Length: 227
Image (tube, rainbow, N blue to C red; front, top):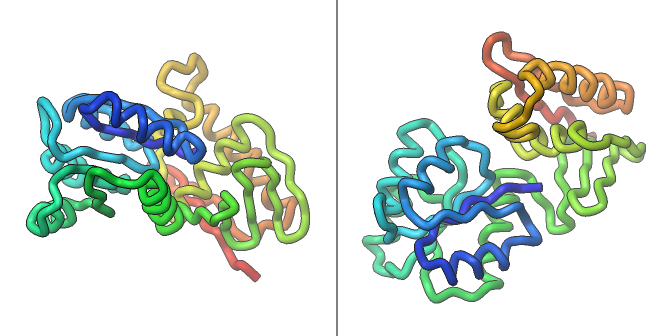
């Protein structure tokens, strides 16, 4: 499942946004800019919904700090500021989209889906597609061409994360934190074990893509041909 971060100091609005998007993702909510920055710096989120007018650290400063740290998590700015200059400032700071308050629930959901489609390969049927590989986030069905592939537990979660980040380099630490969590008692080597098993299962199923190991860097999921 996707993970969204909502940074909004209006607790009632933040709760509403979390409710609106709960069918799409697991939602983390924080209420000030510094807390938002701490969360966003983990780089474990698929989309950040960010207010501009925040206590402790404003939204534009938060966004600028993320981009300076080379964290390019898609950001939707959600704000009462509706002047052209405010929108320009938001986009120039690295925002992916901009939605002014008040807004319709349907528009927020559509804009988030558009971001996920553009950055994560999400289809309207909540499928992830990578070459000949299709994965349904609702039913957990996986198809390689016409053949079904069964993955359970963390193997399924790992494939989802890789498909959501096609062609991007993911470090072992990023993968471990996303799939097993910061508080996990297992060791970092579990990533290598699961990655090896997943490679074998995809290869045996006829998947034309690959999971590259980049020595001392991490992994890269290459989708292969869609033929």
